[in-house]
Image (cartoon, rainbow, N blue to C red):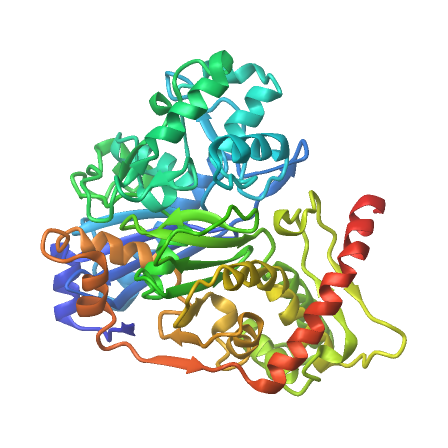
Length: 535
């Protein structure tokens, strides 16, 4: 991916709408990314807005007012960036795409009113529903999946359930408000209800099983409550006058712009890392961390550590999703940043991370006996309903800055390693894993440690730090090419043909050290569980 210089040609392309706009609502930032529709590897401008979830009534949520104020702020920031770079203000685009964090629960009545506050993927209160549905459907239904949230609400006899007429994800909700269409990209839909990759939509047999089991707990058959499923490149509607005003209250944005199917952050991460073909996979690291591996064949068993989802084109994917990612690492970095500031030597965030990460390279391969748990929230893979960040060492451990930061970096990947081990035991082949997210901006550190954590080569491209906002912009640009090229062909020929990739093989010393670290990590989960119960 490249960034253009200023120029009349770029300004003309923006004014004529020869562009694609991607917007992604992540866990901590809402990002907007503008690309040249004919050369999607060229980023023309970006915008962003910081936001944060809140813990209310023991549930993680974002107010919907924050969704729209955040979207408007991110979009305005992008327009400002365009204006400053090229001296024009965009009024139209060739296509727009919306992406957001997957799963969770947004339920609406027949008039479109939200029935309960948005319940995010981070909530772990759906244990009974997930277990019951996993046994019934013979498919792993994770705690965060939307169908688990709906069915748990029914089991709990929540009064709003009788009024549910539609439920969707955050991306589906935003898309519906912008276009009037209740649709969802297949990758995001696979976190609502299991998908049949052969048909590209909800599994009809499992729909029938669910309805027979749910009986009268719901007001209607579940298929009537779900959004329509679309494959990448499908017709997902166009921006309405009302939608344009929601995104751009200044009134400069015109209606009629086509939108691609809304997708989840997992799908856009796969696109952003060129990992949509069998034997490829990617790791996305942010507030959560997850790996997506495109399957060549079905898995032989049900595993609670693995979700079965799809690529935006509908191909089956095994997903290892960990609720906790780099947030605890960021908290440690923030503490050291404040120390630098208090000492009179302030550091910009990128410089701070670079300093700490490179210090970690000098640490012991096993982090000197230190162990870090990044559990701010519950972690289904290890069976914890609530999290407590924990840093543990023995009296004889080597407590140094290098080892402390290395332990925190290893801790980001700890739970992921446990899930990836299950995939390896299933015999799933993986030629290469692509990584993206801000923690990979410092070259050769997190990438190197991740290679040790998964025991496979890890690739990072120039797109690594842009992530899902760029990925959904690429999916928006794909609308114009979908009739002629498959998504994989489009990425090969139009997007990644000239993109350089840096590949790191697992280092033998790191492999041995990380193996020792992971043994301590597994043994210490009893301490993490006790902390969650006691504190």
